[in-house]
Length: 433
Image (cartoon, rainbow, N blue to C red; front, side, top):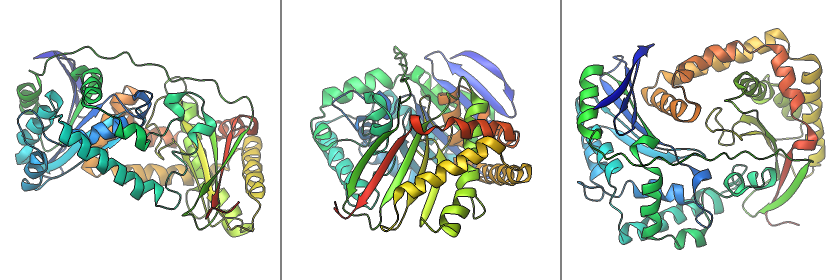
């Protein structure tokens, strides 16, 4: 059932089934477990206008039974095998995954194939999961301090187009109006085998696993794969400011948002921004931490990140560089913004000290290696890198690429974060004016 096979690189075996499903098989005998992940090329940015939150809602529906399994059977089969499972929705993809003892490999492949072939879409399941998602939004956003900060609140300030600016968690009215026809159309449009990547990592034999993949996924009918739209839009032509009220927030907060380079067109430039974020706020010795928390004592917390969802390379272009801070109500937020601008200007002019840069990149590379010692983390990183960035190998190469970032590249990244092309979001606590 295989239409093409590529030679393994660093233990990674890549295959493509006749129906278009891309398959990554990665042997790792460190422990007698296997991980299975399905990454589907659809996320918040692909959901239709008037159906905000639909990609996340559909993720929930995929756990409500399938062609051969009743509701909750997927849960029981994984847990009774001693495994764990979950799913998540991102800007450009949705994933489904489990980690189980290696003896349960075929069971897990059957479970994922069965719901990729035909999830159980019923009116009861839809209405139930709309209520579940609404409760999740209440818990994680509406009733939590800083619940939508910054990933929901910042995009409509920095971006103009619906895909980039709308609330991916969803508006209650949009969720309540979702229909079974919407769900069926969404599945038909985006859940074709050719629009997905299957990643299997762990204690496995590649040939035997390939045969099991063919057995369970090979007969899923091929369907048309949607043309992936470009979400590109021009950067802001001036500074944009917005203020919102968070009745649950104990202290005011602010977020600065900048556009990042396209990682496909300028990966070195993108990674220089990622290193810049670490130089600014990663660790007690980081520049903004030292200045704003311990020096000027303007903030109680400050963080910089490359990627709107907090992880670099998790989305296609356009993506967002953010700096966030929580601060006492007696502090003028402009003082914080001015201090950030000062540090960026200093880095743009002088670059980081080579020892400082080595310390930061070594720390980050070490954390990536530790993270990828966990089978689930490496599996998800490989699958998302294959789907979003086009090369699973990038997940394993990232520590070395980070370590190779030069001071001049960081200086250029700092200089690109211009005040006249950014968004500034301020959060006012407690409903105060």
